[in-house]
Length: 163
Image 1 (cartoon, helix red, strand yellow):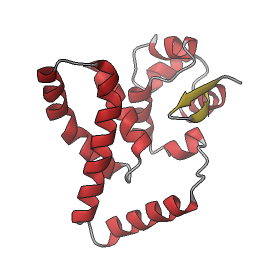
Image 2 (cartoon, helix red, strand yellow):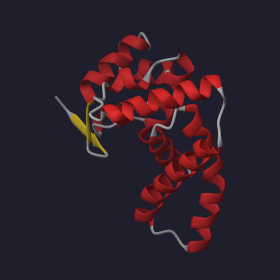
Image 3 (tube, helix red, strand yellow):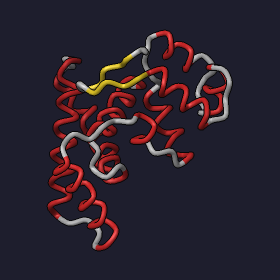
Image 4 (tube, one colour):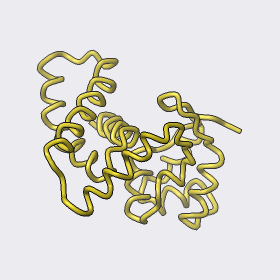
């Protein structure tokens, strides 16, 4: 079992790839790349690194309606947080978003930006430009993914990798 560690959450790489092969009806890394709309070598190089092609994989799963929670089988340890997430989803469906939701989303985006930009030590001008371009994308991601900070961070890392 090969394990990837993302923010102290262990992901079983082999098991996740097995699920991806089934979901995308693929028998090889090349076929999986193509099915997900990625360059043919992308999955192979990610497998060699015991990692995932995060942004492409997330976009492909969202496009196919694949639940990322089920794909990664991440256990939720804090039942209070789960109840809050369920409550947030119900609020979105019934009332729309309110000021508290926007403040919470902004806090998540601030934390994510700090986590992904601090290690890069960009010049101040460049960092401000990146924040200006990335903030709206991440705010939308927060709402699209029901305030799931791990997914928002993955999207931010993917966007920075492409930049």
